[in-house]
Image 1: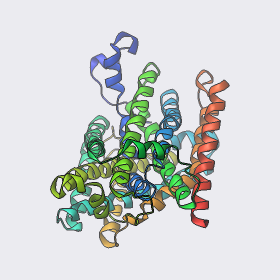
Image 2: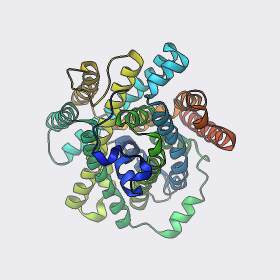
Image 3: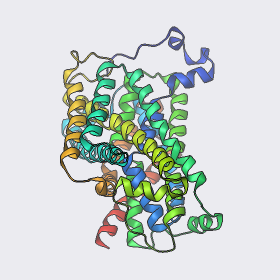
Image 4: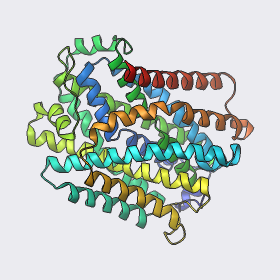
Length: 422
């Protein structure tokens, strides 16, 4: 991985000589950014569909996914800090080039699906306010290219956090929704595997929370930011806070949809951004509702597009060997910036030319769930083999991680297959 980001003189001091809050603020970023990106357009649509179709029946799943998400992403922090290498590079060095290309091929598939989803969301929000699709997509793509081509890692990280925090409006929307406590409690006691349609959404929700590009992004970001061993504890808190925040946002969207659409029976599918906006915001009024929903969805789409395209640029660089860092000028790492740009421009162009692709969002999340055995298998194998001996998974925590990974992968694959077949 490349040289570390430039830091202020105090940040070069050992962590033990700095106040804990200053250490945390210096480390804050990779975990929060990747978790804000986790609540992307596809995730929001999946949560909304879950609430509209099954009420509060999948709310407990959102809460259960908080520790699972932390366990998975904490491994990327551990690997990034104690090896100083990105995910693809570490797979190549540990298991060979063939398996590295297998992993990055899965990343490529997930990246294409995610970018189409994000730009479909941008186009849908633009159309809510009468902005032509071509204009909204061009502005979004141009902004993303400007931020990454002209910024350092830290600047890109700050912009991503600022964009992602717009997602907090969904929490405000949920607090205003006409939800009833008795209905929420009844939903929490629901068996989410009782119906094939619900199992399909279980898989979609799992795939909406644990995605291949998240693993690549966070490990590469930790290494590119130059986090050190003494900052490991703060980086874990960064990841824990992000995991809690992203699932609170997902739960908020589900609650808002359930409160406004669920009436004890299946509702029509929500296939466009406009339909979701109309469904979630009737109690706020058209103007305020569309404005709040638009801000939240746009923030989610933009931060996710940055993270997804950067994950691809980092991943392919780590496997192929081209220079890959936001700390390098575009002339020093041309392929890194070109891969990022190809993802952004290609995604925007496809969405500009194709029909509304938002309806594919839930299918994309199910696809992510079907890839979990491969993604999580590599992650655990690296944590067992590639880390320094003192930081490898071992003892009871190794067995806990194995149980979490096995259960999550099995549930995701089972839900996806049975939902399609059933």
